[in-house]
Picture 1 (cartoon, rainbow, N blue to C red):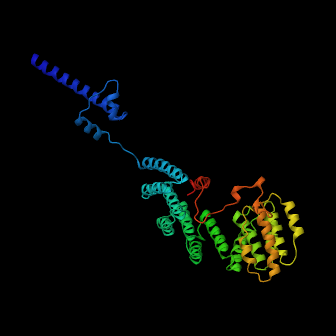
Picture 2: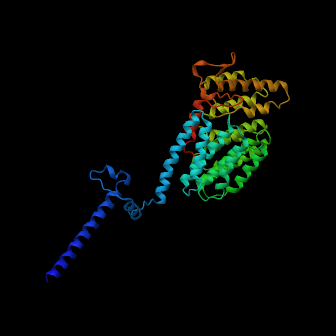
Length: 395
């Protein structure tokens, strides 16, 4: 009986020891799970973990990171890299910035997350831009950079990424010949004009306006027709304000009517009806009226009256390029000289330039209004900073 009792007691002791070991192992695992293994030595009661135990622990508690967590971590990493690259760009360290942008491309190109892929787009747009400016000027490399965006997203179903595809095609088109650019506009218009998404429809409208601008001076009648189509689409929608692009189309068709010697009453009426609240409308209408009448009559009194009424107006979104292109083709010498005189007067007013000294008036010059580009364009630090601010997070 004693032997049997000893056997039973031995079994009980062994079981108790086994339970204690299991509890100890569980506590070790819990402790290590909440504290990196390499930091175990710093704990109050350090536990010696043999190489064998280390392998067991690592096998029993693998580090599991979900795809979502990986994407979140990558997003944070990419944002840091973009800010660092932008900072290098601002400091004119273009080659170092370029290297970081390529690193961002490498890290984001295989992602399935649209937000990560937008960083891919942003990086390649920055690369293309760097290839377009001095000292890295390389037109073909810029075109190739845009192609990377175009080829990756041309068949994408995500609306924002499709928008990036369109933007890249448009930006690339500015590096091509005028005919190739017009072909690009037509391709994109045909591809997206019936798309159900409103944002993509808006891009089509912007493309039509861009096409109209490119046709000015080459085919003014077609340019007017394109803008007329857009204007007619919106002019009877009384329940909503006109998009900014359509307001611009009305004013540009008013200018084109003068250039092409067509009746401009329709566009004046539209401007008065839809743009009467705009601070640009009255100064522009009066200015165009003076230019139109200057073909036949002296407009000195009208010009002085205009200057009194619109002393602070500066034509911030208006270019006189088309008017100059038109008047330079006019054959009658007196008409040409008279109209050029008033165009010069309005352009001097735009830049606040004193016609006697040809220099800006010092008291109210806004540097943002006058941009003089050297033959090899090098962006100033201020321009680089502004560019980064305007493009960060845009795509």
